[in-house]
Length: 426
Image (cartoon, rainbow, N blue to C red; front, side):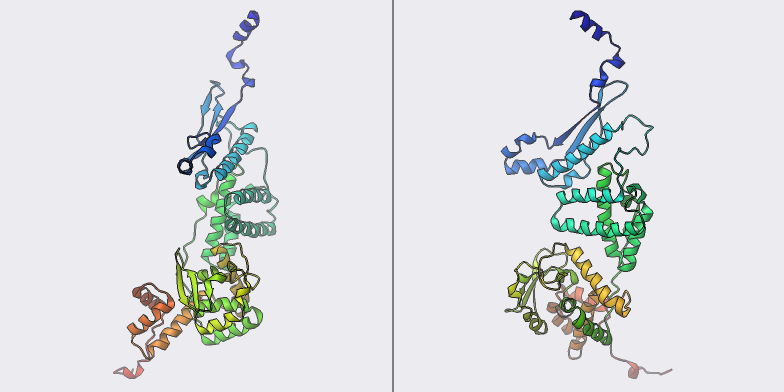
């Protein structure tokens, strides 16, 4: 036995059974506790642990000294998630892919390796499906649906340009910008920016999972500044054309527009309406105002009550959305932006494209139009200030100054003709 031990001792260091030693170690830092203790912790203590940063920590054996050397921690957004389950799922995904990367031959000490990729090469279709599956595990169902619809649109674009089955690295900045430009040309800067944000989030996940080297969307594709509101008031002849067409072709879209026109709601506020928000007995509507958490209350004018009564809203679930793609109340698992984009596109298809209306006309234009209409009616018998005071509780503006600025912005206060008052005629 002694002779064998001596032989082992005399083996040169550089071949001292290094092949039997693992090249790396990977572990998790989980807020300073052993996760086996999690269920024994109080809720307060669990919250405290989640308030700390979690990360994947790893070491790799230096090929010269043969010692494990600690590498940079990997967080990659894991701390945006607020539950133990979500964080562990993300950390395990990072660990699995890092192991695949290291077992495939990558070494942090090999400075000559450029653009190293793991053996698995993803097509654009596979990469998008992979990160979409990760999103499903980590976000709400409504948020997931927005990513799902974005991926479906992007896949159709890639398929049209013969890139869907190509390597994901063929999806370059140029490709993404062309996709975003198509959205911009069909709608406006806001939907384009929403799509950019969705794709950027997905490409970040691809980077974090070693599918691509970097997220060029976040780094190099800029968010566009939205232009000021271009919506104009709509002339009466165009209003009649729109109403006549929608009465036959899309009554649900017409009713949606009437909430904007008669109740002066913003489209995003109409999107949020559910059955229990509409009290036809008291003629009240309860809604979440734009960028507000608390509910506001408005009267429903009789012109709208009469139409709502014909819908027999009491036969629907109180939590059903009032407006859905089916044309009747029901469930709709999309967020505010997704629902707004749906109706924006429907208005474009049914009205703007059919009657060749310019970018200055949109659903929001109906709010401008009917505030202008009501203000000018009041001004026939009221002073400017009295008209503003009468209009404030109807439009829902929270300050007189805000409504005055709005009236001036949409040029609702156009004076009567002054020709007869001129002292000298040229």
